[in-house]
Amino acid sequence: MNIVLTDPIRYSYISNREGNEIREIFYQHWEKMKNQMKGVIDEINMWRFQSIQNINSYANEQVRILQADYNHQRDIFDQKREENLGIAKAYHQTKQTNLFKELCIACQSLEFQVAQLVYIRNQNNRPKVITVEDETRTKKQDTTNRHVFEFENRRIRSTIEDANVREINGGNISRLSIKSIPNEIK
Image 1 (cartoon, rainbow, N blue to C red):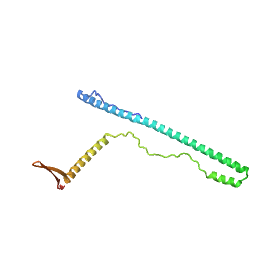
Image 2: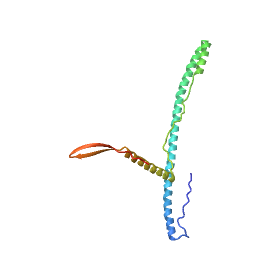
Image 3: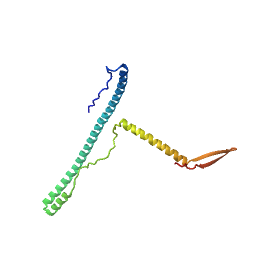
Image 4: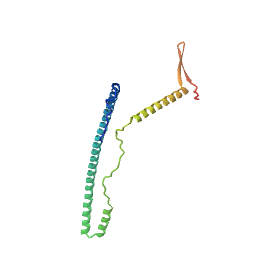
């Protein structure tokens, strides 16, 4: 993906010195933004490259496992075939057609299969771009939620507060438990 960036105007011949100074300041801000964006793009592309390599490696491993299982199942298949060919030959030589028919029915009922493919849910870490607007909205929501929580927490504490009060009477320390009266919120 090719990204085209247009530079902001750095100097203007029709601007005065102050205007060009402001343009230069904003140009430097733009360069920082551009460099940050390029850095994030590099991170995304690195993730893409590594993910593709991981996917290819995983797929190759699964194909290897499938081929190994197929070869193992094929060995079992070939063994069963050879066993039944030997039995069929014996039935043919002894003219036992009924037993041969039963053998054919038994061979037809055999089932051979290869490994199955199932899909597993895999939560890989992947980059997600969060826009400045989304980040600002989230921070505002977090701040609002924190203030609501703090308000609720103070209200609950004031209505159900247990306090241990120590009263010193000539060296005697006694503890009193005090329940405060709930505040009415109107």
